[in-house]
Amino acid sequence: MSTATLGMASTARDDENLQYRALHTGALIGLVLGILSIFVPITATNSFVGCLMVAPIPIVGIILSVRALGRIRRQPDQYTGQTLAMLGLLFSLVFLIAGVSYGAYVYVTEVPDGYSRISFTTMKPDELQERNGLVVPPEVQALEGKQIFIKGFIRPYSITVPRGIDRFLLVRDNNQCCFGDLTKIKYYDQILVKMLGDHRLDYTQGVVRIGGTLHIEPQYAGPGAPRPVFSLLANYNN
Image 1 (spheres, helix red, strand yellow):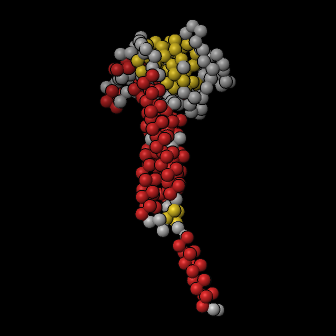
Image 2 (spheres, rainbow, N blue to C red; image 1 turned 90 degrees about the vertical axis):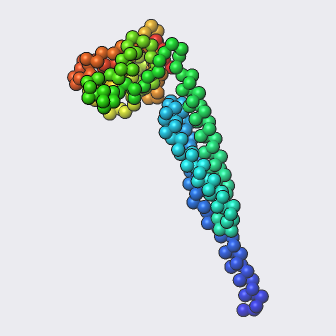
């Protein structure tokens, strides 16, 4: 083999070695997290707290993407994936800012004037209250007979999917395992809702927003109670 041929082969091998660069793992993971960050604005529609709970996804995506970009730019002969890292950074930033902003807006504007916000979390007594025999937290008990606003899921009394329902359980989650069975739901995770006037709802598996007059009957907190502790005469739904 001639010297020229050997030289060309050596040059080809050198070019091949120079052309090979590893895809930076951080850039790939950052892109995946950036795409998954879409759950931030999706979750923000129903719950600002839920939105904040998934916010770490884009935050980690931003950190990994920025680190990957820095490493790729410092060692361009060893790593590739700059485009992936930039996309991951862009998706994470956009979904994080848009999601948190929208979630905050919904949270601030969703409660009608004259209604007090409560949640199933606030309806549950803490350990000290339970030891003292309090089945309803005092701050919730103080809302007896007052207008409240709460979000939850519809659990109708019929297994069939109803339309135009005016009486149902509003529950903490939409788990179908105990559909319509009062004995399998904690008393602080359900409200018996009676829609007033022409207000009606069609069954949905999504979150519903309900407002109305709250009534509390702590004596029904025990097992086998004939009705829920909390009931709501609803005059608002969204």
